[in-house]
Structures are given as C-alpha cells and as structure tokens.
Image (cartoon, rainbow, N blue to C red; front, side):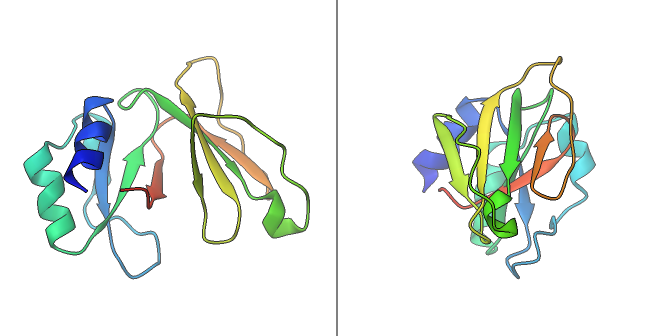
Amino acid sequence: MTDFIKGYLDLGWSLIPMLSDGKKIPAVKWTEFQERRAGLDEVLGWINKGHFLAVVTGDISRIVVVDDDRVKHGLSEYGFESNVVSKTQNGGKHYFYKYDKEIHSTQNPAMHTNRNSVYHHFGFY
C-alpha cells in the first residue's frame, strides 16, 4: 500500500482523507489541499486512522477526471480510453487525464468533467 501512495505523491497528486463510512465526505477541510500537497507521513497517518483517499483535481495535481455515470442511467459507456481508470460503486467509471486549462468542467446526470478544485474518491491503493 505504501508503494501505491508513494506513486501517487511522486505523480504530484494532492491527496485528502475521506471518511470510511461510504458517504464520500472529506475527513478534513480539504480546501487547503488545493494549495498544498500532503506528505507521505501525513497520508499514512490518515490511512492508519481508517480513512480512504481522494485526489484533488486541477492545477494542484495536474489531472482532470471524466466521471462517466451512463451505466447508472441505463446507457452504454462512452468508451473513453485512459491509462488510469477507476470503477465507481454504481458501475460507472472515472477516467483520469493530464490537466489542460482549456478543458472546462461540465455537469449532466450521465457524465461530468471535473477540471479544477474537485476531489475524487478512489480505491486503488
């Protein structure tokens, strides 16, 4: 597990702790992590307390996430391709891409693009 967390930190990702009750709520005031990245000891402390992790998107982590929830709405997936994909609890997928300031956030019931200052819960560690 430590190797995975080191890998995320080496990528420059800003990680935050999430409550482990399944409600996808940060365990801290996460806005400070839009400006600073937690270190390995801080992240391991969160894990040792039983927290899950999320990544802050946008400038700080240099990633954008496309959240494809079409399956949840009875539609077929768009078929995005990405080297980093996580499956959501409802059967959708999060596709992670390199950040680009020209990509803007979008919201609709079936798919959203989260470019800046949003956190994404993930379970791959």
